[in-house]
Image (tube, rainbow, N blue to C red; front, side):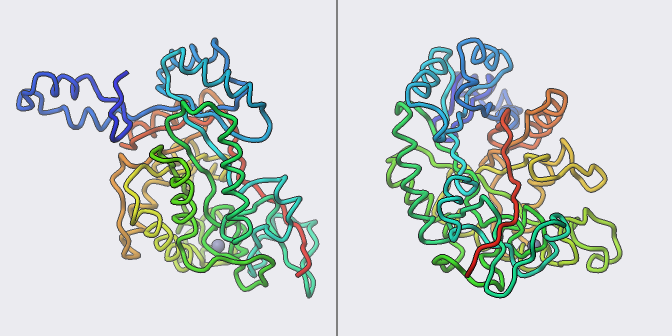
Length: 376
Ligand SMILES: [Zn+2]
């Protein structure tokens, strides 16, 4: 497989032929063909990587393997992973889950993301105690980079984790660089825009909308010229609004009674996106793991085809809030491969979407949280 070094996408045979023969007028379909050929990556955990599984993934037309890099596996097993993958002629990427970190959350409960002041999240946790005066409800185990202490701790962790892997990898994917779930308190795990929304902070909240932009820039500085790809999540959408705030239309109910989707969510999302993309022209991951994000209601655009709605969110939200979209070939969409039948549909939809890469997650990308009470 020929990989374009700039876009990191496999070149189509037609595009190659064009280059070799230098007679593009005879191949008018070539640019479209090239667009329709995304880089396909399978996302797995280290113990899943064996010569047999890598051979199987190659047969399934994956061009690369992304391995979850965490504290679970030994250095030696990552070395084995890297060897099996390169021996099969596939590329290796690493995937690090940043914010969702049970160990860090248990060690530093005050760095956890707060559930915002709306109490709609409580309907999902009827047995959870309500925060009393002098207490804040947090989203365990989310420790987002939006606090100074967590920002530094996550940078150090990433540096440490990368020591475990031979330096043959092609790119690093960083997941969950936004705020915690249910950030305004509406209850939707995709509501990420706010930090301590009308609740007291228990850590040093970073100002501005550019925490992720600065974080990825810091990681890039440490890695030299290797690509560092932020994986982004879209916010609450119109379909999540309560009917009384959406012209009586039925919806997912995911935002409870809160109208954040068409106000603060989309506005701050656009600001954070602009910060992320203003000094960076590389790929951006887009998390479209439909069951992890509870996007399963087909009547509201959920299910295996949800990836197209996640992409559409960018197309309508960004221009509406005065921000620039990016061309689809810069998007690396992440879909679920937890069930064979669902994977086939989601993968096909993702390929058709025009995204530059399709990442099929054969591991669960957990996006859930549990409320925990922390004293101010
Ligand atoms: Zn919200």
